[in-house]
Image (cartoon, rainbow, N blue to C red; front, side):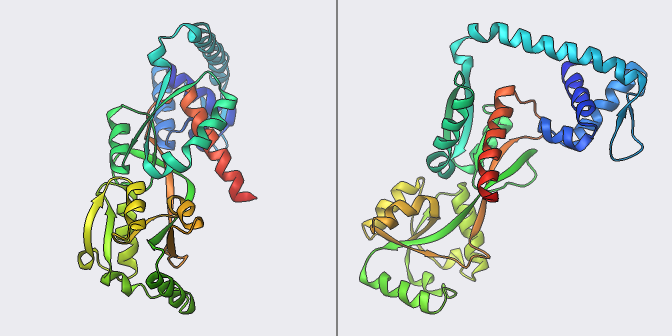
Length: 309
């Protein structure tokens, strides 16, 4: 028996449902079921009646629930008692983030979070989306923010923000005419991209991965593009585009300030293919601290509220 099994058991008992407990604890439902089965096997008793979608405690389950609440309350008291004396280095919550969420979303997220939990400190590691996942899997961070979803890597992805990819160009007469022509044709023909000088994000970035998917859906092959540079940061890309070195595809979040100041132009893709999700990432079946759970809850509350406005 371990404390994690007790925590899972208490959550199922409180929620009267395995799925709701899984969501509360940021675990998969099979993991929740495995914890409960292991606990029942060790104690030699049946803890829940599972006749319907809702579950209810057996008599033995009710006995254990009383002990479980005491154990979890004691755990909380121990954490509170030692929270003021933790080594400063351990106070920092490590977060891995790709550049777009790091620059344009994370500052507001952390500000909102710290209003609720002012004692929490953060160590933000900005990298590309592929490396975000590696940091999670290696245990260097338990929470990450990524601009694409990697398959078969034992991570769980929670979509929290719908981003939009756009083409950015210098604000010159040539591209102002191109923008006018695109608007008149309802923005469906992107074959002109194959004639342009291109600057791409580096391989491994979520923007690069989503750009390749997007252009492929538009019938534009990456191999046919005249790519002169692969760059690690979208701020450098924007500077190169402003200096008329080429054009690029980046997040609309990254493009809007320069576009509003008329330093660059942006061309939206058709709405049915130009969107991508940004994700909160954490290890599937990993153990999250209370602070890490609260951070995920803060993110989801902030952006789910925006969607329902």
